[in-house]
Length: 305
Image (cartoon, rainbow, N blue to C red; front, side):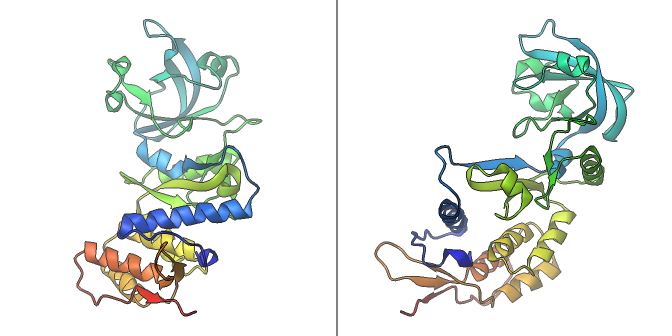
């Protein structure tokens, strides 16, 4: 955010609006740093850890048989030979109902003997569509086609890790999934990928890149480490993530941030520019939400000419 000094924006009161300002300012910065693209857009991806945590069943296997009747066109009941159950409980074969939209069709998976990694949920969770009726398992619904990854020796579907790295090998993906399988996370945290990170470079489409990670103990550990970063944007992400973890230690961290010196310059259309202590503002809001009594910090000051 230190890079945004001088950017004129309208400041809207409230935590949600502060986050909106930060993201919009970042998009403006990216526009100046990277060549213009006609199709510029914010790109989003789910980390392999969140995909794993959000699934009820994670298996590795190959297609044994396919049944498309009496389902509508594009729908299949695919039975998989299970070579490894990473999360949940599965027998030697599991049938998953799926609606295939793009990429290889299930018959191609079978013909090419694809080594597949599947993320499934109980079909009852997909009750928004009657075609899941009477099925036991359904592919997890998420961003893109991340519910099925190819792990063939010569072809691997890439995945994105919570540390903003790109996983491009079978071993790296399987190791991340196995590590994430015990997570008890029930929600995800949106993170802005740092511009220098591999995930950002792989996903950049002319604007910001958002990565979704599970809200669990690993996120808290990650956020605490980020607080020590010299990157103000990463520190903001750390504070936002720690809002999920109301502990005595984190209350102490937030209290310390009430004196943080990091500032950005903001300016409305008809008012003089001011210096805003962004981490102080975050910490003040979080402590208030937690019901923790604290002295209100100085959050804005006039900017000296």
